[in-house]
Image (cartoon, rainbow, N blue to C red; front, side, top):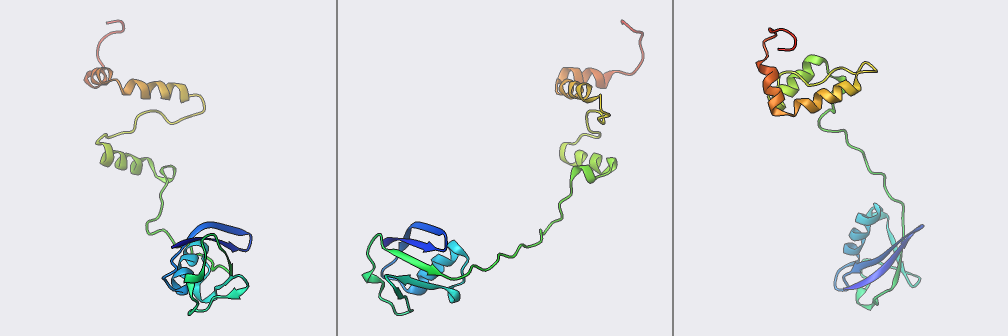
Length: 148
């Protein structure tokens, strides 16, 4: 096992492991994983000679410079298996349903931001995290006089 430097176009890959007991095809497979140049389109050169399938790799010294020629194939972008749904695209009913499934809570906390309610909304969300405050609000029935 020796480490070689692979030059391909403007790219340079240092310390690429080359198994001197392996085949040229195996090394080309490693180059494919690094560069996306298909094995059948690769030309590998070292010291001016093109490597063929029967090239003896045991003569390659540690630190040798290997040149790769070939064009990379384009990677195909696959469609996502599941469509992405954004929270902003959901109706209020759909958001409430998802919230209930995930947290067990019926309605989301806070207010819809109307341009000047963000500070009040943030305050309500902070208060909602205080269990004692939350319990008192749940028990409140709406009766009673102010200041009582």
